[in-house]
Amino acid sequence: MIGAIGRGIAAGAAGTTVLNAVTYLDMALRARPASSAPEELVERLAAGAGRQVPGAGEEADNRRSALGALAGIATGVGIGVAASLARSAGLRLPQPFGALLTGAAAMAASDVPLAVTGVSDPRSWSGTDWASDLVPHLAYGITTSAVLSALEPPLRTAPPVVVRAALLGLASGGRSVSGLAALAATTPRRSIGGPLAYLAGPVGTTAAALGAAGELVADKLPTTPSRLRPDVLSVRVLAGSGAGAGLAKRERGSRAAAAVAGATGALAGSYAGAKWRGWASGRLPAWQAAVAEDAVTYALAAYAARRR
Image (tube, rainbow, N blue to C red; front, side, top):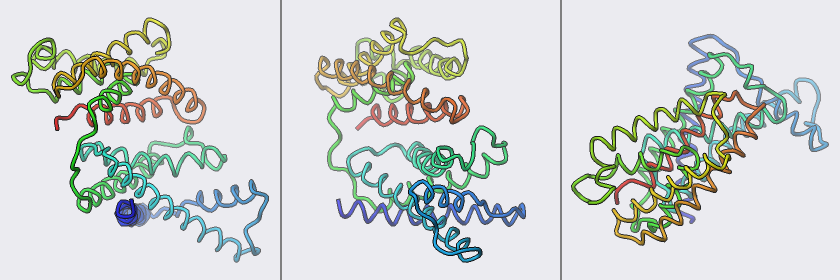
């Protein structure tokens, strides 16, 4: 635990340094001023707690500026520690997915408080505003993930098959095809027989990829029915159960237990996804909430389905 925290502090500090460097480089290239959002957030939080930043005039402004910068450093280091603890527990995603997820977590930790406190409304941001926020956080995610990979010891054991089956089910609750698509992409056809061999073959892999792509598009359409509608929910549960059973067959685990875990995970993922989209509605543009869910869903699926 202590080692994981230390690695997280080092990785988060490195990521924060790169994030700040990219931000200042953008300011230098575009000659834009520094954002006042951190200082405004400090003021709002202090007011919400019934306190006031000490001092008056320039003195108070300096303190707000310093506290805003310290809050940013604390956020960057905190996300690094959280990522390190997750990785030490076995949640080690492929490098690109890990970098994206870490960057997205840091971006959410920075932007959600601004939206909740009313300091800024992400729905009103321009494309340039989003790029100015996205690029530094992506650089943070890449750096933090790379440092963690370099510092941490290798995993000695893989998570149990039933746990990975539950994660495949959780992903299927987000995007019904994701678990099966990840399983198809990571399973060599010659290594296994039965229905999974067809899924891992050229036809099955192509069908899964097309289904996944179609679902990513359909999810953003206003006419798409709720995932909690009984017929839609049953499809997700069956997909999660099938993905869990397929994983257990490939890994020589208990197919019955994995099928139940996959179905349970899909049920939980469906309700969690619906809850997330409901919470994000009115706080974030709908397409951004959907893309964030896409990233988490397929990162989970890729992690759970990869061969050990």
